[in-house]
Image (cartoon, rainbow, N blue to C red):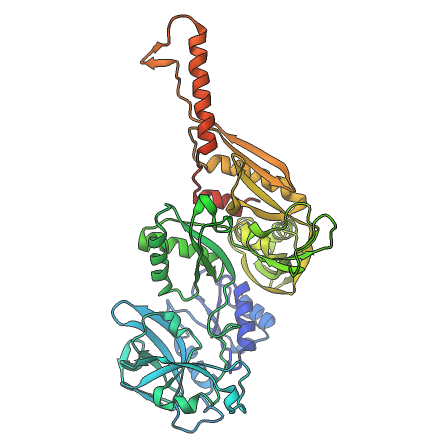
Length: 556
């Protein structure tokens, strides 16, 4: 069922969902439904016509509905019953071997993981023991040889504690047969053990099921059942001794958020934050909104404030021959660099390629000028426009991924008064050559690698100056002078200073000043204070906040 808003019309996400649904083998029908038709601002007729043109639907097949006013509910259910075919048996179904598909799963504190399942073959009953099996990569319906047997682990077996239907409340039935969908509680403690798309079978049917057909579902990523992360960022505690507490809190969040991909980092080198951030977690997210939701949940549910670095972008570096800088023997000529501490040093000859994404934007036509200007500012390629209806346009362009993960979405919402919707996918080809440079941020001549960023050379000085000015306003004032510098290609391109707190050492108490009338005594005290400030500047440490990293993310 593909929903469309009768007031806003089709969104960019509607296009991506429709395309994915068309590519899924197990989707037999797509039912278009126009919802919120009872709103005063609804444009049911215009939106229905635009949906039929854009998605190639029959206008008469679009169902008008409203959940609030209970309009069209029975029509939607009737369309599902008549338009969606009944489940068909698998090609090699023998009527006995159990194969279960996990559609979704969630965590409950008292019962553990609850799985929403579909029985593909056989019959399951409470008390049976089940195993997870991983489909063979090259598996097909005709592959039944031992060389193509599926992968399983005999140690990971679970007992079916409760089975039933969802109507919509849970009704315990104790059994489910082929074609039925229901819930299953099997004593799992981590939802990542039961990701959508996981196939399970009973322990007694395991010898038979490992050589039988298992369908490739739309839930699977490129490798196994794990969903592929869209972007990665480092997460560090605000306090140096809070890493264990942060790691435990993130693990608890992952119980109800299987989209998180968590890896621990050491913090002993600059690529993990070095002396400024210390140890942290490398976390994979499903998108920019996922990052914001993760930070908010961490604060609301666990009372923790964490530092999230700017999203990491993988750049492809191709090294060129050079007489002055020889590459070590056996070193690769092409390298994917995500951690900017591995960026080639000045003087090394290389070419860099950055990833691109194909973007689609749907917005009211009277914001067209602002959106086209934003796309051009972000170095967009192949920009095209297409009217959807008399009020809405579709904008398509190819944009650098490094520009999209910074502040593109916020700027898009600002220039369209919040009406624009945005969607993206990997471009083909993914990497394109670009004239990029790495801009390093220094605090009191010390390199702060987590604040470094990569941008186009033409805007390097402008963005470096912008980051320095924002850091000047967000970094706390210290007892010593803080010098903020931006460096690119071994040259300082921007600099700002934060003045130190200064105590009037000539005042001993109240309004009484150092007396005697001799200026040498006053000069001696001022010189002593100056030396102390210099020592503090050499050994002092500037504390970083989330606002410091936001200044890099929103540098443009």
